[in-house]
Image (cartoon, rainbow, N blue to C red; front, side, top):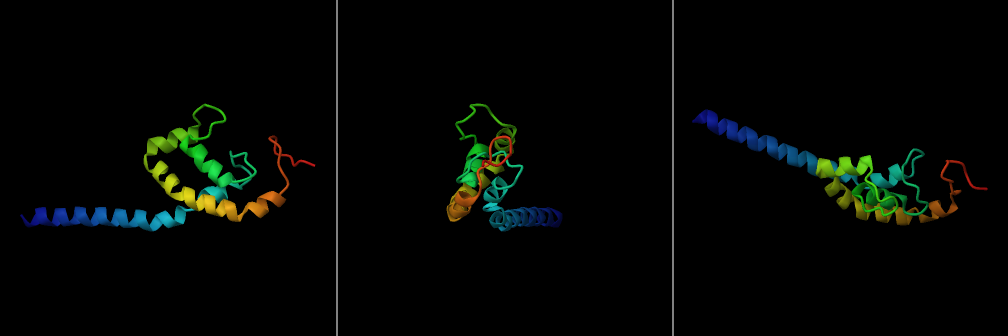
Length: 117
């Protein structure tokens, strides 16, 4: 009987620690779409609000191609990714809005990666 009680307490402790780790790591992931979308290797090809466009692309709400991307399929299979993306979307929108002057003054890039004159 004491072994059963110890096992049950251990399982509760492990599940509580996992939940605590997820809650602590969640703020660290907020706004990462905005940072990733502004990198040179980003699949997002939007000049304005690229972080928001990247999050929508990850969720499959991008209406441009009509095809499922590998990132979108992986996101939906992992189950947790859509939840994190939806929770990070307001932060991405806010950061993209704050970075609008930077985006407006940045030279526009063509699809092949060269800068427009």
